Length: 231
Image (cartoon, rainbow, N blue to C red; front, side, top):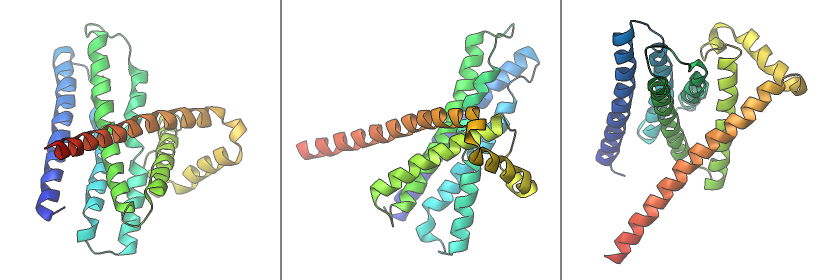
């Protein structure tokens, strides 16, 4: 891919994601305008956090054009992994859904699902970029395995955020309590069945969505190639 094609693709992707984010913001703003309550305005902050791994993924996408310092690369990958759970986290904001007059329940459902899907888009597109980076050095099967594991790690991160109320930056501000909390769940899995139940099932769901998107992309490419052969 030429540098011009690379920039064009990134611009189109950014424009599309910006449009999705703008739609989400408009939904919450309209709700606030007519009700005067800030019930779902917090979703904008959650979406911003989901935006961070996409930014890191975009930087990594152009890594071949950047200095190849291993420290900088590890720092970017670590930052991506820390913030990646914020992308699927918005799915759990469905817990806040309930009837709130005078807003119809269906409207609030669309609000939350719009934010959740946009957050997933930020996260999954960034994971595609991570895959492209790894494919330069690793076998595709191994890269797919790594992606699957990363999605389960993201699911575990969602649990830590939703139920233990840890944030991505707590690894810096409160590393000892966070690492103790994680270590306790790993050392005594039977005492934390909710942790591993949610991690397993949400991880499977995220993998279902991610791999569906990949297979749809593969099917589209195969169709395009077949049409090319027919011409």
